[in-house]
Image 1 (cartoon, rainbow, N blue to C red):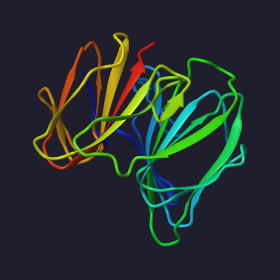
Image 2 (image 1 turned 90 degrees about the vertical axis):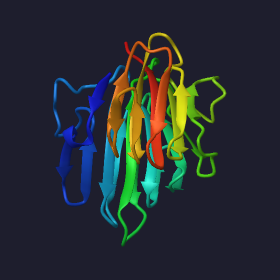
Image 3 (image 1 turned 30 degrees about the horizontal axis):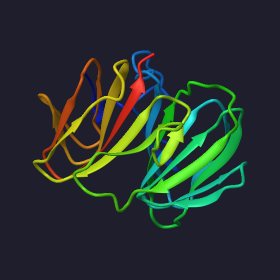
Length: 233
């Protein structure tokens, strides 16, 4: 198991953007923090009122955005114009190339969201977009939202990777079985605190786990967390 404390993340405050990077990204370069298998980027962003990321390009990356507070105003070269709220999850397969912009939909409140990049197992695919709302999902259940194509999940990406979310009451234990024998599991605590074996993860802490047939996650307080299974190579 590898612990990624919130306090050890790359942090930058640009005024309009206050951001934390679990892995090397942008101005943060750490040769020991490049990725967790095919999980390449895990950014925790706070965007100031009325500000945002102007139109910029991506290619050959599977991009997942999860709004936590506020509204992401999204526009892309595929013709999508969306307002993403907490409970929504968005995926984009950048493939051969796309452009998009993301802005804070409020002029008074900060926008907080997670940005996750997963390296695809197929390059130069046709760009695509999808989203789903999970705001009414049952508590104390690990809901798998993103999976590979034809997996039957609400959203899919070009990789044998799986993303699950859970909101859990104090004292509840959820057991997670990694999807494949060659995958690693990345657990990120959005809010609250959980315990895995003897490791306690607080708000915004993460843990990378390998070589496990099952993982027990116990919520110490009211908690909200993400579990991602990704190929390690």
